[in-house]
Length: 560
Image 1 (cartoon, one colour):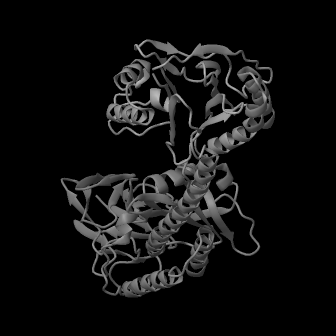
Image 2 (cartoon, one colour):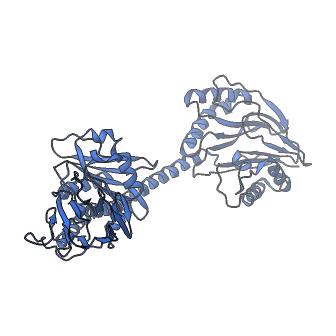
Image 3 (cartoon, rainbow, N blue to C red):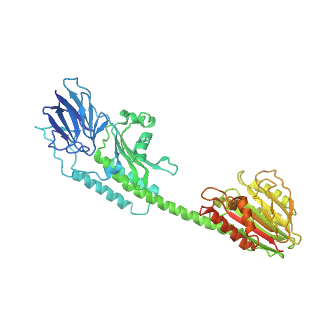
């Protein structure tokens, strides 16, 4: 049974060969029975043989593999009339018997190969001699350059890139440099670099066209997925004849057909891809081009990662500097010292969860020392924005706390001013108490704040619950004043939810019952020691779990 093979490789003319022996080898070597001058083919790539009245093909351990009708084979597979066999990037069309001659073209089936394999290809470095012309097997395609020249070019390009990247460079300059080298060595008509951002989106970060051309989308979802997500290098001869690009209308509407793409891949993972394109007939990219682009992308990826790390480090330094400045400003508005009250002990403190706190407290005397003002707030948000809001709130409070008699009137005014000056999502919970030092009478307003704990000398707990909206939340918010009294031996604890809502690894909150139990255990300690003991209790409870919120306390004890 006669076997004929029609062979074609990218850029070459189809050549037909009739098999007259029972076994023959296809490969790049001149000693092969069928020599195909395609750089993607191994020197002895595959063997065809006759057995039991039929024909079979087996892969001979080739570097790029053998596929029968798009299915890769590892051993032997039967060969039938009309089969298409891919050896590297070339196509062998099988004709058995006297069947009609079919059309054979290299349709541009995409070649996707792991980029990491191309970084260390197993290349036979011996020169490739021209195929015999007068006798022996025919040659398919044009004669390739010496493989050693291919390696020299590759090393030259990488050396140029490494030297160019040795200096300090921004990401934008780096991407332009990569495009410079791509146009110099590959001469595409279009080139683009896609980078994956922090949200996982692939964004075209740089693009260039040959003179006289208009920039067009040089990608498709399929290409992005294969190259970036899977780390594959891609070579596509004609996108218009590949079903995987059928939905890429923007790509197909252009005249760009031939593509090679390589992932920007470093040991930590994919960063993006480099893709080069040309119109049909303007450029045909071979295996050597793909290997060279993969090498260029690999060097570029390491540099991109380094440039990003440097930029991130500089950004962190800038943010840390801003945080230090914001914390310094915030510390400056906290009371530098606490007033001395005859017959009382007092302590206050603030521990930010993120370097800068959204909590704020103020303890001051007024009415010639007859009244002590205790104010504590927890503004919405965290970090720098929260710190700025506390600074604004402190400024708004400065005059009303000294001049307005009743606590509710103070918060009526401050809440209205805060609402006028801040976005609707910015507000603050607050506790404002005015203590008559002589009598222990406490007039207070709780504007959505955690209920302060008034712990009697006999252990009875009184929670000073909320009686109004957070300040700055509504333009028409109005508050009412409530009264309590500190008897001798009583303790008042004003705190923020960073304490009561602190969580352990099991996501349990510290909660009010534990807060009350801890307060009763430490109620005989001076206020400073009481606060330190409470902090230790919370630390033991969270067991190293990071605090999600700031912690602020004001502790006031009336002496017995």
